[in-house]
Length: 314
Image (cartoon, rainbow, N blue to C red; front, top):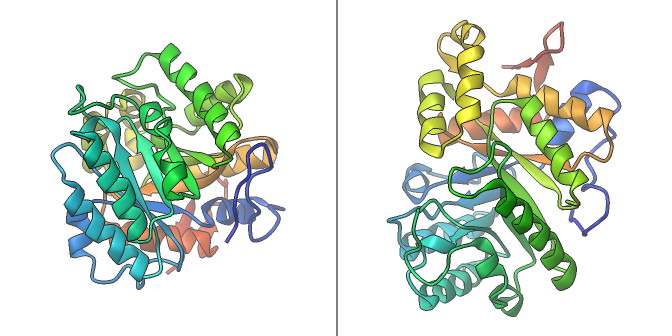
């Protein structure tokens, strides 16, 4: 599998992006996907749905327990996946909870984690931010090989923009100082222009971390609007409303094909673009999203004549 070192080019793709179709497949190569403990209980076999070594992020939302997360991490590792548990600062009620989750996930086979502040408005314990967790020294001590942090192309409803900028600079510095690769995984978005503009903005401000662009997998428009509202992705709600006519032509269903085309073009036009992989939120179902993303990664799609999107080949 490919790896990333700070300040180098993005990880190598399976083939040079000599044309748009190749660039699309390369962008989706080594995609990651998210699962909740409740969703995981309904998945009969991860190995039957995903390529070996796929990064599967395991959520840890407010009200969830560490003991619900760790069995999923263990199962994913046993089925040949790369489990990436969420370590959400504001959900941790005590230092002992933090230690239990980080050490327990590592013992179950996790070598990566997503370190985030979490969705709770007030900390449940002593930690308020992802930097509180990174600076603890625990990840280095336990032996994690790579960590992921959150990216907010549309801003955050809980964190002011200047604070986001300072935190991103501190995370770049932390990775350089510790030698542990960090990768940004973004909140989901539907607006390729906004994603590209945000990437250029943070790169100009000094970001050197690679980026996994978060996309909603194929789902109904109603589901997408619901999750966008829940997650505070206001700009994406507006984008959905403006593009409603096109989406409704798809019988109420939407897939991120146009957005992937836009991001692939961005990489072809700008070799320094830090967006190098995709992360899927399976709002339309885990198995459905996994199958769709796998088809794109394998190049089993047909570009539309105007190259505005593509259709998965049956």
